[in-house]
Length: 419
Ligand code: GLV
Ligand code: MN
Ligand code: MN
Image 1: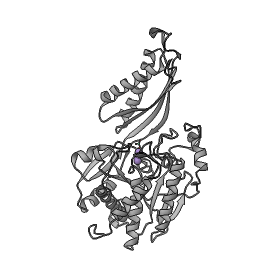
Image 2 (image 1 turned 90 degrees about the horizontal axis):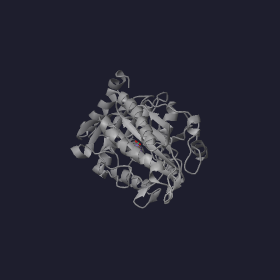
Image 3 (image 1 turned 180 degrees about the horizontal axis):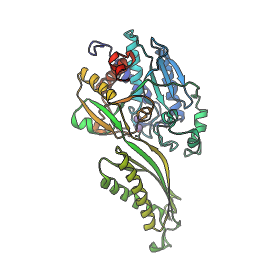
Image 4 (image 1 turned 30 degrees about the vertical axis):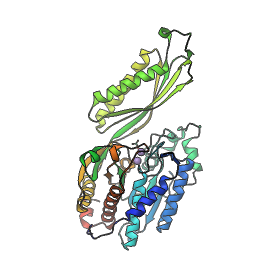
């Protein structure tokens, strides 16, 4: 199909939908829709309503992933799937994840309005608990469950701050189903969340693959004591050990280099009281690297660094791996498809890896996958300042639409390449 004369997404409508969903969970400048929270469930209800308005067949699977399917001519074919997630981190922007899901709906609306028939079905999916912070599931839970990369037993042990388990929240969500959908191919459209595209003035990022990552929880167990009477040289200060670890982990990321990032993101001290030496400190650490060998070495060094920090303060250290996600490299045919469509639409492109984790890295173990990035203002994300202009949102959505159309029409050239 000629991309310049073919269907286009309705950019204004897409922006309005982003704003409307962005109001769910709004608290000050940001919004919080933690996975399987009341706010996430409200956003899911809105998504289902919009899917039904588009005439999609709404399906739910055993991980409460929500699918909206548009039929193709050939009912025996598997769907071409566009997707991402609508849960958020705490105090989020309104683009991370949700832009990919709503752009999928915008692409389907454009197909409907142009009366396009495709050979394969086209679907939009919203995956459960992509972010992972609510229950410390490690993220990508809905796609990992679907791909068999994690089991329900493992998730049963994940609890939120109120003690509710991940599995109970799933069972009570009202979004559990029995459908099983197997994508023919998967496209995830997302904001970059870093500064590469904005710094270089590029319109579309053609994603070659996604970093591998691990989340760990480190508990430092020292001794609570009186802040005034207990001498400095006899303390076993768990807070101090955590602080030492944080500084040393930052040094380690620079030492490992090659784009390694390490983030001690969550710190809880106990009893967390002004005149008590902290007896316990619990720290989460997120480490990411594209090269699997370097990531393995980084994780081993990370464990050494936190143990040494504990020893320095005479504090015991316990390390638990919360999650480990493999890196993904997307098939070259899928990367070329995204690049070709972006260029045909007249956009500047750049190939790049993704430093953020995405469901696409999991789904790529099931079918050919690809990702499309658009610029994030100042490279900011996971904060209320996260922003991508309506023009950039629309550009990427049109690339998504035309990639999906090609895959769903299944031209001979793609089929000959096994896609
Ligand atoms: C998800 O946003 C992640 O990369 O942590
Ligand atoms: Mn995301
Ligand atoms: Mn995110």
